[in-house]
Image (cartoon, rainbow, N blue to C red; front, side, top):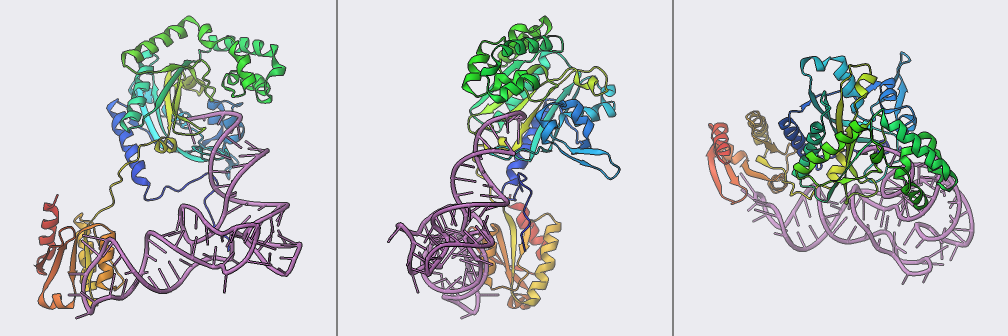
Length: 421
RNA sequence: GUGGGUGUAGCUCAAUUGGUCAGAGUGCCGGGUUGUGGCCCCGGAGGUUGAGGGUUCAAGUCCCUUCACUCACCCCA
């Protein structure tokens, strides 16, 4: 029989790893809520058109990376490749702007993209996603970036680099884009095949190309930062000023291009040196026209996504505290086993983590089990003790052992265990 | 979609030029006091060496095919 494995690029998070995930999520929740961001939970499936419209028809994500399927009523559905579109959909659908002109949201969950897996890249991956609606001031850009950096630093991640850029708005970007195309057309033949394609699909991506020859060509190209309109240019310099005031060091990367069509003005990315080729830990930016483009009011927005697998990859090694059991009950013989079973559940009902071995094993093997479960105490009793109506309580650290009467054992032990903290 | 690397017990890995090579450590189970853990000692279970085919007297070891994993490109978190 052939064994069934998980789908390519889709991983299990095993019990040993989940404490790390909890820690990351908890830290995010605490910090974000402190900044006034509250959780929204959105579905992992949406109508395909939502993503087509928001991310952009000609992006790689929409063109070849989405998990799309036909529902029974013939409607096309897609497993979300990113969260922003869904959050905006919900924001519009529930009229969240009505109750508060500035809405700050975050959401955590799995995303799906059908790419070839590699280090730091999976077909199902998890993102922490933050969105801020209704504020177009440079201060909000800086707030969001500051929160992101604060979050990463709180987790103890070192060697971070923050890169920022401005992508212009719907006024200045098309002009710039056109002039880049003009420029590139001049030396089109010298570009790598990928870039020759990019000229027509996403010309700004040529800036990002790793091929040497393309690099030298693009070096002489016009730079977006020189061609920003007054509004965008002012906005960008104020963002930089705020970041400096916050003592956040950053680099301006005029070549940074985001892969999603909707970004405007400020774009940013956080990279880590510890990652591999996929070294981008988090990325985001402003998307001022997107809410209205998706059918909502003309509300500005800014947000970012953090790749959780990548983040966890560069987390400093933590002394993962081993799991602890409060009490192990070692029972010998069927009479004792029966009593122990009831006791175990009773302790658990009181919030004490109790454990026992249901198989009637030797005391030695039960002690080994108690040790493996890292139990603080072990309660030992067999027929002899039952007849004498008491049980032995062993402190697993000190090896001290004392006798407790069976009458009122539950209360007595509960007291002892609770007092221990 | 394209290219490179790797595939031996649950896990980490050994196995000289193809010739007792199917092993070790760890984990698991049991034993070393008749009812007491961590260290130590002993024993046991567990692999059709990813799968299929070929070369050979003989293949984990060579060749082909296939699958999986992995890294990189594309692209992104």
